Image 1: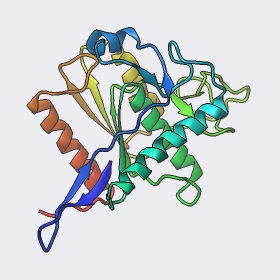
Image 2: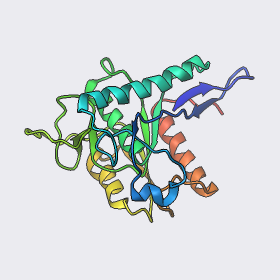
Image 3: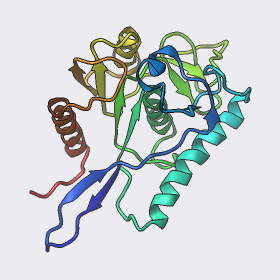
Length: 229
């Protein structure tokens, strides 16, 4: 998500505008996705261990993920956008990736990371997170390699500290995994939770969308995004 000024006034408003990045790997959709989005193929994956993905080693997969994100950001710049990138929003596997990118940024620090996102919005995201850099301790419920591999020396569990909004459909068959992402992978006090009456899909009803927008505006404001009245 990008913070961009709206034009036409002496004190322009700031809007948070979403821009999409396309996953790099062809795949098959799982049953939870097919139950809602079966007519929306072809399906793509961020994670090489997903159903039907071609075999790709972890380092190549990480490079493909970085390239896909950077290409989307560069394309947006070429189309005339000028605002800073402030957050990540993802659904399902995309939410897992967003949280994993934030974790990588947290580990690398502001001066080494390619990215400087302030928060994430995670819709139906599952645990565990992905290690997007060699050397990140993996194993257990918090972090695994992009191909599902675990370290011999698992080390101390790593948790995401950057602010996140978690959106859970209360009739989603993967709800227990979404709760694991919230409870096991994120630092206590860094999260917001929005629950809605739905299954494995993006909320579309006005009341649910309004509630989500309020959460996004709140976390954006808390992390320094300026909104003019």
